[in-house]
Amino acid sequence: MSMKNNLKVSHVTYITYLGMMIAVAMILSYVESLVPFYFGAPGIKLGLANFVMVFMIYQQNAKEALLINFLRIILVGFLFGNMSSILYSLAGGLLSFIVMYLSKKMHIFGICGVSILGGISHNMGQLVVAMFVVRTFGVAYYLPVLLIGGLITGLLIGIVTEEILKRIPKRGTQSL
Image (cartoon, rainbow, N blue to C red):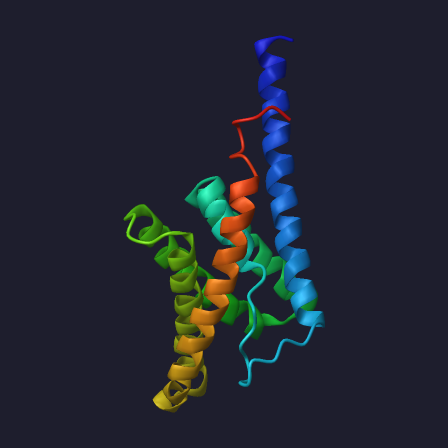
């Protein structure tokens, strides 16, 4: 096979991989919307789709993780939500991405710690948007609940991601 054909196959494989990751994130978002997870407080969800972002930050790179997360938020918002859900999800998703990326890059925390920080910061981003939407800081009373929820869900997503990463070789280290 010529070099030109190898590059085409490689590019197609790369695009296919990213498409599959977006699909997995969208499916996890949809499943989460169908299954009622109740943590004793309204608005707290498992954040199953955040598994894909943590996975991609460790498996690939930040650019791909951000792209997949952004596309997932927009697509899921248009398919199953509304503009309000997109706004809240973008705020939480962007803040959690920045916090997870920086904490991974600084090598201070492992996968579970990075995921916990992501869960907490996701909730914080959404809380800030809520403060602007309702035009009061009164919603900040919900902060302790969101911190605990982010810690628990971040830990669960981190454990799952860590176990999966142990079993899947980094893309590019094995032929398809």
